[in-house]
Image (cartoon, rainbow, N blue to C red; front, side):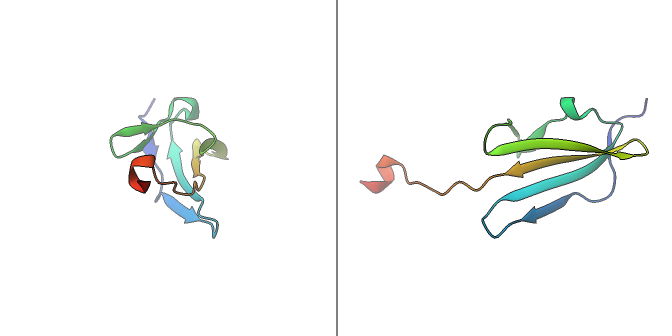
Amino acid sequence: MAPPAIYGEPKITSTPEGNVTLEVVVTNAVPEKSLWFFGDREIEANENFIFSHSDEGGGRKTLKCEIKYVPYLPSRTEVS
């Protein structure tokens, strides 16, 4: 089997509310084994990072990472 590869260009979209969706079409990848990173730090799925995928046919799959907007709250040390 061929190694996983990105098919085409990754896509980044945002909403007026501040949510961001990262989308990439891949070939020869297993979505459940795919990992998302911010720099060298792995992103884990939770209520603010939602992962999904869909089958595009022809061995291609679309992987998505939706990033929910979280308003910035200053830490206690920044307020004092």
